Structure formats: C-alpha cells, structure tokens
Image 1 (cartoon, chains in turn blue, brown):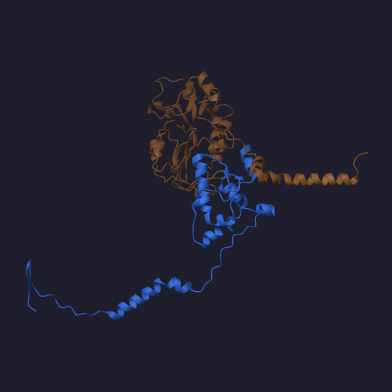
Image 2 (spheres, rainbow over the protein chains, first blue to last red):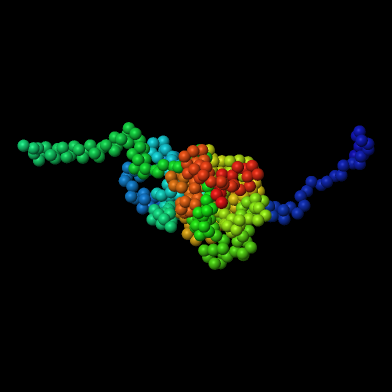
Length: 162
Length: 270
C-alpha cells in the first residue's frame, strides 16, 4: 500500500509486524511456575483439617457459680457475636462519661471492666480468648496495655495499704 | 399448752420456704437491686470543679517523694533507671529523655519561672515544689488534641482517653507545665510490681496525671493526697465549705504560669 494522508500531512506506511510470540516456551513455563508458586499455599494446605476453636470455661470462678447463675453478662450467642462492640461501649462509657456501672438488659449491674469483670471469671486468657482469636487470625490490641491477670484481692489490699 | 411438734415443723418449713423464695421474688419485682446492694459499690466522689492546694509549709521532701512513689506505683509508671531485667538497661541520657512522670518535684526557679525576685527567701529557694498536671480550666492540651483523646470532664478533670491517643504530641507542645510524657519505649520491662488495678501503656502514647479518676469513682481521694497526710488538700472549688475553699480563703496562694491564661487549678501555699 502506498503512503497515506490525513489532515496532518503524508505518512509512511504502517510497519507490518508478524503476529508471533517470541520465546513462547520460556514465557509459558515461567507463567506456569509463577501460578503454581502463587497458589502453592492452597495446594499445600488442601485437605488439612484445622481443629475448631474450643474456648475453655474451666476456671475456678466459673466452677464456683451455681448452675443457674453460670451466665455471662449477655446471653452466650450475643457475647459470641458482639463482645467486641460491648467492650468498646464499656470503654467509652468508663473513660468518656466516667460512669462505672453497667446495667445488663436483664437488669443486673456490673463493673464495665475488661480485667476485673471479664477476666474475673475467664481468668484463662490463653484457653479462652486466644482460642478463637488465633483461629480467625485477629490480633486485638487490648493486651498491649490491659493486664491479662485479674487483680487478686490480697495483692490489691497489700498494694493499697503500703 | 404451746404448739406440738407437728405444728412446729409446719411453721418452720413454711418460714424456710418463705425465706428461700424471698430473694427470687425480689429479683422478679426489682431485678438487679439485690445484687447491687450486696456488692454495695462505694459512692463515687463528685464535684463541680476539682482543685488541689499544695501546702508547701507542711510538705517536706520525704513526703513529696512518697507521694511521687505511690502515684507512680499505682499507675504503673515505669522507672527507666530500674529495669526488672538488668539486660534491658537504658543509658543515663535516655533515662532522662524518655522519662515518664505524672508527679514530680522541682525548685522554685523551674516551677515558677520569671516569678523569682532578685533576692529570694532562703526557705523558698531550697523548696522542692510538688508538681503535677494542673487540670487547667482552659486546658491548651485539650484544644490542640486532634483526636479529642484529651478532654475536660464536667467536673474539671482533664482526662486522657489512651485508646484514642495517636501519639502526635501536640498536647506536649501545648502544655506549658511539662505535665505530659510520651512513651518512647515499652514500659513493661521497667515496672517491677505491676499494679493489677491499672493498665500499663504502649509505646506511642502520651500520658499524664488524671487526678486519680479511678480512685474518685471508687469514693477514694487521690493517692498523693492520702499519702501527703494533709499537705495536699483536694476538693470541690465550687463548694464554699470544701477544704480547698477554706484553704484558699485563709491563705495567699500562687499558681504556675498564670499569665498564659490556662487557669491552672493546682494552688500553692508557700
């Protein structure tokens, strides 16, 4: 074909490029290696069964409770789903408003405190909290500051007296 | 004749039933009340405007040091010169640069710069003033905080919400009293006996005195006030009969850097 013309002037013919993939084998082998490597975690873990979390309720404080009173501040199902919202509400209530009494929907009163109230019963953080948190790979940053040991009355009294 | 055995057992049984059922009946009618009464939470101390008077005539250096110690112990404030594990030791320079303090002592020239006369009373010259957050009425730290992590409570306590602090340190630049400390390093290796009733902090947070807000909520006076045995007076500035008002009425007091307009609420009797 001859040179062609448009509103800007005369132009050379478009170069004819052969439709061909150079180094085809290398490229496809490389691509295959990449896909296998990128998806390798899926293959390596296929069929492996991860044991479901098993939060442990065996603590002295819980065992001491009568069967009827063995009840968290909210029903278990709600706690399972919404404990993080509850904790963040407690946090705001205590720090921002200074109100240190929380009334549960059932009318009972509690001190809104992670270390005192939650860990007061669930003193086994490793067997209770960490079970699910590790399973779903969440890292709550509570424990950077809050102590994971509930205060024992003896130690408190001693500290206060001195 | 009195009652026979049969009658007696009947009455005893009935009254036992009644006694056992009473609590659950009460629970049905007024839920939570019994529990609340049982655990009988102490009444929190409340005020319109908390303020403190430091009576320097009664405060000797040993008492001041005890106040500092008790405050730092119950708030888990690290002492970088005393690592729990000697391997975590910090250079003397960093011990000063990274220091965390809620309450501390300084001589007059540092506490009240520009206020000293050319020739000063010997007594005042050698005084170590007990300094802490002034819980200003017009707190510059609150104004500059971009996340409202520092805020002024209704009762005048300038509080920190550590959960919100992003560590920008504007408040430290804003505070003219150096009452705020930044956590440059993890404090936990430097707290010998962790006080169980207060959290520690994480690196990247600012902290300061909160007038023992947690103790006030439990109905107790701030730890330093209790420890000082009368040298520190704490009370409601809005209440004319409060010990703070009495002390302010009876004595001439000075405050730190009042010309800056932050209206500090810690008063000093010299």
